Image (cartoon, rainbow, N blue to C red; front, side, top):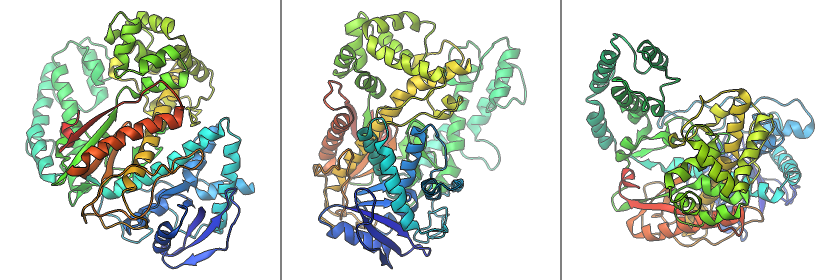
Length: 603
C-alpha cells in the first residue's frame, strides 16, 4: 500500500491519499487534524504495511519519531530526485519538492532552500513539524498533488536507467537509511559527560579561562624551540610548511603520514599537538556542553551527504569521534554495545563487482589479504595489501609498482575494472556504483568526496597532479567506495527490520527512557520487489536500537540479555546485504563484532 503525505501549514494536521503503484490516485484525499496519530493508526491497522510517499524524510519523520511514531517504509522524493539527477549527469541540481515539481511541469526550476544551520540539542524550537526549511503547505502549490506527480515521474525515470532493478534497490535503501538516521538521532549515543571531562583533563590538562589548555601550550613551546622560532602557530599548516622549508625540509603538507617520514625534532611534538588540538576544538568541553544532554549525544545525520553515498552529519562531528574520546561512550546500566565493523569491505566489494573469479575465491576467505598473499604474493601479506590499495586508490608509483604488476597478472579482470573507471574519469566521463549512484562531473570532486587514500597505501605523487589524473584517481575509487556504501546501507535497512520486528503490530513506541522487557527476533523477511522493507509497528519499551553508524561500522545499544541475538542479527544482515546486491557470489562480507560496555573497548 502506497500513501502520499502532505503536512498542513500549522505543522500538526495533514492530508493523506492512497496511490497506485504507478503513482496515480487510488482513493479520495483524507484530511486529518493529527497527522502523527493518523499515520500511527495506519501502521497499526493495515494488513499490508504501508509505504509512505513524502517530500523529504528529514522534514516529516523527526516530528513523528518525537511524538512516538515509527513507520516501516517510505519513499523519500528528495533523496530519490538527487539520485536521479546525478544519474542524468546533473549532480548537485536542486532536488527539493518544488524543483522536482517544476521539472514535471516544464517550469523554471527554483533553487533549493539553504540547509538549516545545525543547532545543538536544547537550542531548537519545540513545534511539532519544526524541521522543515520551508513551512509545510506554503509552497504556492498543492503539495499532495505534487507528491503524487513527482512520485509517478520518478518511477518513469527509474525504469529508464541502465539497471532499473538495481536502482530501485538503491532508492529503497536510501529511503530506509533516512528513517534510520532520524531514529538514531532521536535515540542518541549514550555519553558520560563526567568521563569526558576526566579524559580531557588527562589529555590536555585543566581548561584555561583564556587560550588553549596547558598541554597544548607546552607542545607549542616545544615546536617553536625545535624550529628556533617564536610565535609560530602549530595549528596553521602554512606556517608549519614554511618553518620546515626554512629548516631545509620540503613537505607538501602537514598530514600525519607525511610528517612521520620526516626526520626533524619538531615532528614528534607536532604530531601530538595536531591530535590534541583536534580533540580540544572538535570534541572538547564546549562541544560536550552543547551536544551532550541528558546523557545522550544526538547529532543530525545526513544520509547520502557525501558524493559516494556515505553519510555526513550536520553539526556535532559524530562521524569523526577520536578514539581517545570514545572512552566517554558507555552503555546504560544493564545494557551493552554490539559494535560491528565490516573488515576489508572495499576490496571485497571490488571482488564482487568486477566478476574476477580468482579474486572472488580469495575474498571468500576470512582474511582477504592473507588469501591474496598465499595465492600470488609468496605469502607476503603486506605486499598484497599494498598492491590492492594501490590499485583502488591510484597509488601506482614507488614501492607499489612491482606489487601492482603481480596484481595485474594474477587478477586481470579486477585490475581492469578500476583501471577502466580511471580512464573514464580522466577523459571527463561519469562512472556509477553497482546500484547506479553516479559520480559528479566536477573535476575537483576528488577532494570534496572524501575519497583520500588510507595512509598505508602510500603516495607516489602529490595528491592533485594533473586534473585528469586526479579525477581518474577519484573515479577509480568511486566505483568501489560508493558500492561499499550501498552494501552498508542495505545492511542498515535489513538490521532495522530485524530489530524492529520484535514488536507487536501498531504504530507507536514508548518515549525514550521507558524501558521494560523486550528483545530482538529474526526479521519477518518482508521485501518489496527490488527493495528493502523495514518493519514498523509498536515496539516493546525495552529494545535494541542502533545508535551510531560510521561508514562501515554500526553500533547497537541493547539489553545485556539480548546481546547474543543482536550479534546474530548483524551477521545475518551482512549476509543478506551481500545477497541483495550481488546475488549468488563466492565473496564473503564478514564482520568483526564486539560486545562491550564502552565503545572504546571495541576491536
